[in-house]
Length: 139
Image (cartoon, rainbow, N blue to C red):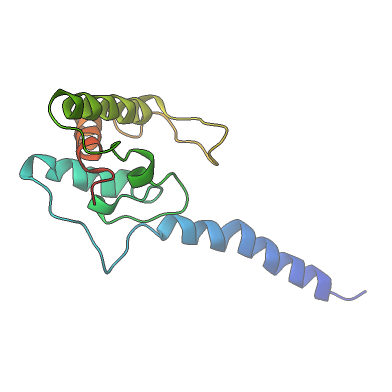
């Protein structure tokens, strides 16, 4: 009996189970774009986002790119260009949504994969939520 089908199957399994997932998780930034400049009060959140979220999420202001999790620039883009109380209300809503996803996780059947709970907690979670809510969709 020939070993060739077993070798080909083994190579295919390694490719599908190891190489492709490793490539997806390492695709965390566009080296030509990099992080954008953000106000000093958002810098810590930007750094934490890159370290903890950038492997899965695309976010222009963080310089991250991934096909694994949702593109936050698209998912959280502000509707129109509200001003005054509407803009503040919209940012607060986005902040609450992001903070909830960070602390409690996110499981949506229409989105492949799942975001686990507790990636960050406390001040770190609030810094990332503040950064994302103020920069997503504005790049």
